[in-house]
Each structure stands twice: as structure tokens, then as C-alpha cells.
Length: 465
Image (cartoon, one colour):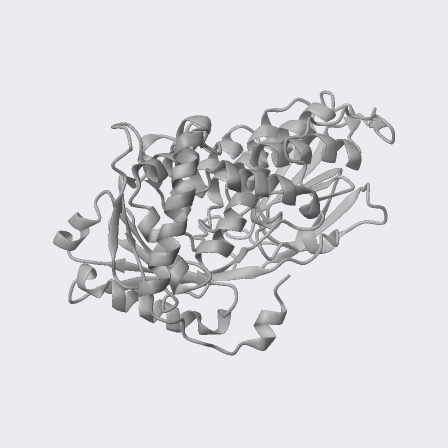
């Protein structure tokens, strides 16, 4: 979670928007039909969705419901279990019609732990029906994917290896290895499509095919750990966030409750080679709460994008989710924005096809999908980017971060912003108080904080974009 609510931060984010190419607050430009192709092919439009996580599944669902469109959903492993904290905001449950059983735990309390060990309880401003949902990705992803298939999307268990095209506007040939039931070796296959939605994660081959540009990434490392029932009771509706240069030099570590276990993990960008050291440190800091004999069920690691791709739409290929770089700084949240971007991209493309009778242009997709997404969520990304740079850079700032979380105003604005995905904070008096309290917290934090440990990582650091 992050304190992404003050007017000051919002103004800073708006000023920075043009430099990052975001269309924040802009009204989507009118669609242009120049370059659009009217169709009378005697067949439906062929759409490929590459990747079956939340972004791909939600895109495929929209295409499956649309007239005169055939949608193929590629997923390399239908029972894939992506390493992920699994937190989703309350608004996602209703917006995406998720059944109650998808949510393993309803977190109503959080404990923030500073580098010096100070603990601040967060959550007292939540209403009775408000919570953060904790999910297992293998359960959530399968539900969203199965729903798309039930509506008519064609599932293909296959690893997409290459996307080929002579012209950016297509058609596009996808070459893949298809894994049929009972077969360990994939069968080389290929198929042609008119439109592609790339939802294939941080290492997206779709993004590579369209030269979407590089981006920096964090490594997230998580262990799923079985702990005694009496210890699990402590985490029944509680999540923990730890900050300190011992657990991460530029992020936070966590203990998140799952169905019958906890996820314990951390992440970093600036010192990825030391991720195992940071994981050992978070295990040490939460050791008493996990009990004397915690059993590691699964070890997971995954790259997480640190910013949006330079190019997210090329021709009739659109990137969504992690492939587009839709993970927030500071909080590291990506599930909601993945699902939302997949749905939004598909809805805009379907509308542009006019019932599957025409092919949209690159500019039309940019003027609808990208402009609407950036206008709705660009401020959140930018504010969280600023806050990560301010509060995750040294132990003094981390102490201040935890100290500020004791404020009821900060807690309310933070949770409201997270749960409902709208930047909050329109109370000038409390915003001014928060500004002065922030200064006080920073002074106090620097006075009590232990010095950050130095590390040498010139190769990795030079890769930062």
C-alpha cells in the first residue's frame, strides 16, 4: 500500500506526465478511420490473446462475447502458478464478478514494521465490509480463464515462440509449440491472425516481436510456508509489511496470508543478485511469528516490470498487463491493472471493429485504449513512483514512512485509494497537516535510523532505465 493521496503528489505527477508519455487527464481523441480496412472476408475476425493470466483472460472474455470475432487464447501452462503476493482491491471483486471462494483471506488489518522494529497497526479506518482480498494465482487465473473459454474463446496449451509479419498492420503469424493431453513434447504449429493482444508477462515475446522497447525490472522472490494452526490464526485477517535495507534496498518485504499457509517474500531492482540474502533477512525478522518449524511448500521467483513499455501498441498488436509494464511502484500491485487493461483494450478494439466488419488502425487503438487507460490510472502510477523514490531510499525515510502510517488520515486515504482505485485526498487542511507531519517524521526517522549498508553492484545499477 502507499500514501498516494496528497494534492502535492498529484500535482507532481501531472507535471511529470508529459516526460513519460502518459495522457493523464486528457480526453481521448476522436477516432480516425484513416487507414482502417473494411472487411468482407466471409469469415470472422481472427484475434489471438497470448497469455492466460488476468490480463489475457479478461481480454479473451470480451472478444469471446463479441460478434463476428474468433478468439484464440494461448497459455503455455494451464495450471500455472505465478509467483505473486495475490492481493486484489475490493473494487475488483464486484467489477469482475468474482465469486467469494476466489478470495482465500479478507485482510482487514496490516502491520507495518520499520527498520528499527517499530510496529504500526493499520486498518482501523476500514468499514465493516471493506477488506483487501488475498488470492492464489493458480485459483484466480484458472477461474478467469475458464470463464472466457465457456463464453467461446478457444484455449490452446502452447508456448508462443515467435510472432512474424511483413507489415506492422498484419496479418500476423504466430508460431508455437502445442502441448496436447498426455504429450510431453510440444508439436510445432502456426496460425494466422488479424489482431494480437500480448498478455504474456514481463518477458513478453509479443513485445519483443513488435520492438516495444526495453524496461527495467525487479526480481520478486517468495516462499510459500506452512505454519502451525495457532500461528496461522495470527494471520487470519492480517498482513505484514517490513521495510529496511536488510530486507530490500528499494522495496519492502511481506508476509501475506493464503488459504492454509503464508507467502513470505521480498523484491529489489538495484541489487537483484542479492535477492537470496534479502529473503533470508525477512525470514529472520518474522521467524518468531512463523513458529519453530515452518515448512517451505514452494519457492517462487519472477521478474516484475518497473515502468511502462516505451511502445504499447504497434500496428494491430496491443500489450496489456505485465507485458505493457502495468505494475505500480511502491506497492508492487499488478493484478487489478492487468485485468483492467486486458478488458479495456479488448472493449476498445471490439468497438472499433464495428461488429467484426473492419480492422482498426494503430492510431485508433492508441486514441482509445491507451489514452483512456493513461487518463484513468496514470496519476496513480506517477504518484507511487514519486513516493517510492522518497520513502524507500534509506532507513531514515523508511522510519518516516512507518511513522506516518500511524495517522488516521493517512490510513483512510491510503485504503480508499487502494480499495477503489481512485487517487484520494481533497482535504486542504489535513493535507497541510500531513505535509508538516511528514517533515517531522523525516527528521525523527533520520535521527533514529541505523545507517544503510553499502553494496557494490555497478553492472546491475547501470541497467536502470
